Length: 115
Length: 116
View 1 (spheres, one colour):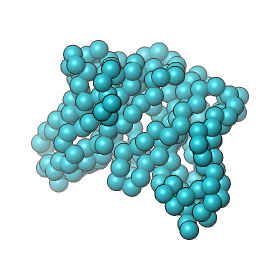
View 2 (cartoon, helix red, strand yellow):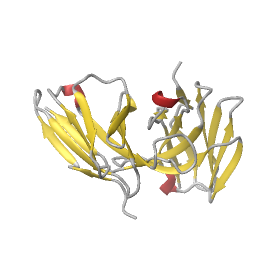
View 3 (cartoon, chains in turn orange, brown):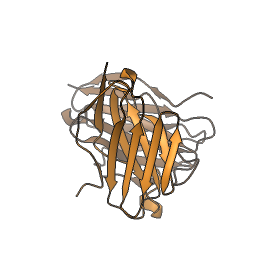
View 4 (cartoon, chains in turn green, cyan):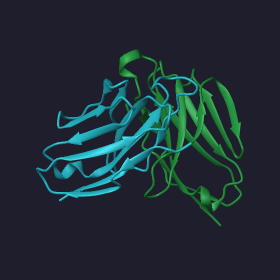
């Protein structure tokens, strides 16, 4: 079982729709959860971080965390063509030495928003 | 506040050579992590440095090494390059490299290494 798994893509949504990206993780001691956006040929850009159960909203983005189900999601409302990118779910644990500075990434979900 | 910078941005090397990549973290960030990104394996953790000490290491051969200087700048070195080392090498900085609020990692633009 992979440590961090994301829903298989690619995901294609029309402009103005809600895009839903999902992620599950296997390590129960994971403490911090992140969503990065990566445009083709660019480096990952942090768009959301979430640390406690529930929802966190930032503009058109909402991150949801359920630690009991080991599940993280990202909703993008009013999707725009400029949102077309690969979205990476990342997790960092809290297990001392083996966690220092180590983000574990999912394989990414390619999102395409078509006009 | 300036972001994470990496040099060089592109490198072409031949098998057997060695290469050194540089990373300057965001001012005030003391933790620097390095990652390798390839189409097949995705983003994989190489190692992390904090206060000039390697605190964590991923599952890579000893040909991959790094160091950190007193100003938190970091370098990574790959010796005896192999074709499979062709990848995007990314560094990321954070305040302390721990889980928790205010320890988000921010990535530099990366160094694209091609091994011929």
